[in-house]
Length: 325
Image (cartoon, rainbow, N blue to C red; front, side, top):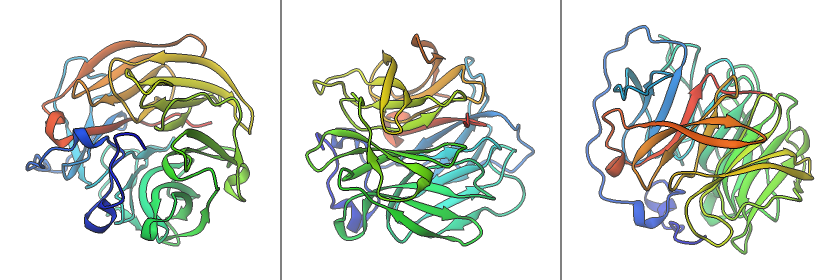
């Protein structure tokens, strides 16, 4: 994986999907504010080197500060389902699920899930509290290749582990309402691949027509299109690219490809599939784009909301509730 963190982090803390050059010395995070009744819609932002995941207003063009937060450390990407449940993978510490629809969870304590198969880096679910949760393991245990774990809140663990010889580092995962899964990964040669698991079971199929130049996140809009992020383009250069595909079961059809402002790894579309939100490592901010599957994205506004994104590394952002299809 070009310019990326190696396996050493598995023995001393979470491995990040962020390139090595963006990993400074950690500073103290903000304190968690008191618990109040928070809105049921907003934008979540994670800070890899901080200890909190933050909730912002759904429209934050005024650059307002976060109004709530939950404890979260070592977070690459995270998931929000259509009911507003927040799914937070925390590396080798497993997965935490905060019950929605209230932002930052309601008064009940969060559910915790143990992932015995690797370092949890991303998660996706139709309803995280009642159904399956697909978890992307960046790497497996003891340096094994990455995988997709299928987990439930009811069991408190992951009972199934999906592997494929084309998956070495698994950066992102998406689950459809039909119960299918896709993994955005790097193969053993370092090339970006998309792997399709029908019914989130079996050994998976390598998607054809997938042209991303690098690894990144994957999401599904309300029409069933896959919204994928490529950290670098096909030549290994910036800016990052968001590509939208239809199908990919396993044949993909490219619908649009848009260059973002800078360097992004993870992003998600909103429930109405009109906005896409991501974080930018190059400009240390959160960026909101207008989203159209066929014509691509256009930058609407950006914000920092008093977050120290240049030092704590804001790596991922998502709408609450998220799109599901």
